[in-house]
Picture 1 (cartoon, protein in one colour):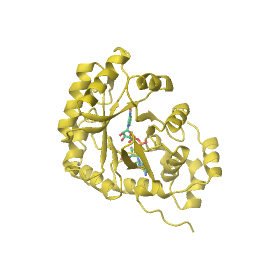
Picture 2 (cartoon, protein in one colour):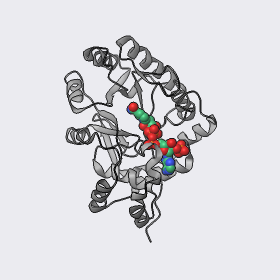
Picture 3 (cartoon, protein in one colour):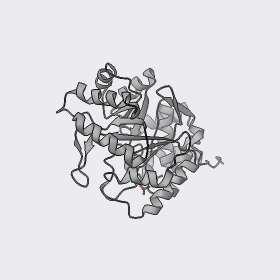
Picture 4 (cartoon, helix red, strand yellow):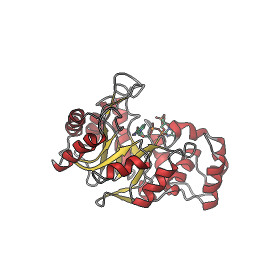
Length: 290
Ligand SMILES: NC(=O)c1ccc[n+]([C@@H]2O[C@H](COP(=O)([O-])OP(=O)(O)OC[C@H]3O[C@@H](n4cnc5c(N)ncnc54)[C@H](OP(=O)(O)O)[C@@H]3O)[C@@H](O)[C@H]2O)c1
């Protein structure tokens, strides 16, 4: 009989972002703590706060959010639930993707906009400096140097400590690194969607955190039949196998599964302690496709 998994984020080991921010390799993505279409407040704001507090109790010390989740609401709830923040908790936020309405996302990388939203995040999160500020999207309409230039200025002013990028290829990461250090990359990636394999490998080689968004393929992997056999063997669930596969995929992988439910949070965090064999990892990669 396989041992029962304990929800403890520290079982995933640690990764150090930018040389000075050490976090457990199982994080939490807070985007689901909003209304439908990532718009407006969640149906039960107090429950959202409980989810965040429980995540921290379980050893999660890396939480991902963005000014555009709600918009604003997600960052406000994080501050309501967790401020004053415990020592060592890293809250990573993002800017550069605007929300004209529910389910709508528009890049805006104009320097004045990036400065304004970063300052808004600082206010909502009640922080003097943001540990990790991620450019949510590169805006093709704005010169790239202007977008990274304002991030460098915000860094020099002490408003952000480290910079990350989102949904970028290797060439874009290299171009950004000509201007400033990039400590993390957040791209869509999971067992069934591996279009960014080359970026995962590049980040692994360069010591850059790879933060996979949609790590559970928005929950679809929780009912993926191809995961059942491995899950049963380990006394685990398909979601846990999918998350353990990510942790195994690269030592710089930092999953941020999202959920609005404490039961799912506990299940997902418990995947930190699930060890797959190399053979299982290979077989899963060969059998699970989009
Ligand atoms: N950089 C970007 O462009 C970008 C884009 C999207 C997301 N993100 C970030 O990535 C994070 C993760 O992405 P995500 O939350 O959209 O997708 P996800 O983690 O792949 O899946 C979340 C969905 O799966 C369900 N779920 C979670 N755990 C489950 C479990 N154990 N069993 C069954 N269902 C489960 C959740 O429903 P319940 O709420 O009912 O549990 C939710 O609907 C976000 O929170 C956000 O921080 C970034």
